[in-house]
Image 1 (tube, rainbow, N blue to C red):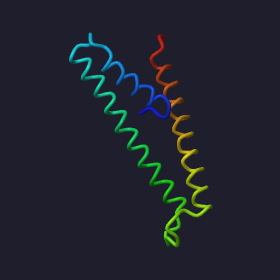
Image 2: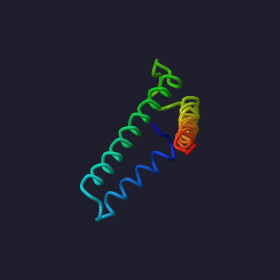
Image 3: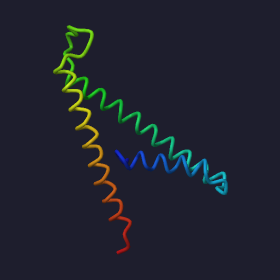
Image 4: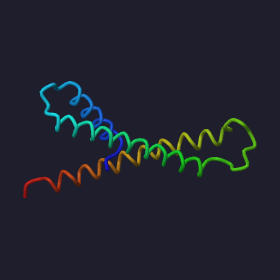
Length: 105
């Protein structure tokens, strides 16, 4: 799996390539579409995991108020920012490891 900016960039590239390049074979178009679909599924899963994690960490289970209070709002904001930051760092590390493995020896 990849994370953060890399996933977004690869999804955009796959989508642009699938739609913009009329010279692609049907197999290449199917592969590009499949890549974009996998990236979208990855993004949805990542968002759902972040939502669950931040909700469990930040929300009071007694639900005293209908809206988020200042503390909950601040906690969710920090939690989401940290989650995306860590996801980006892990994605960069995995990308670097992938490049090292593919480098000629």
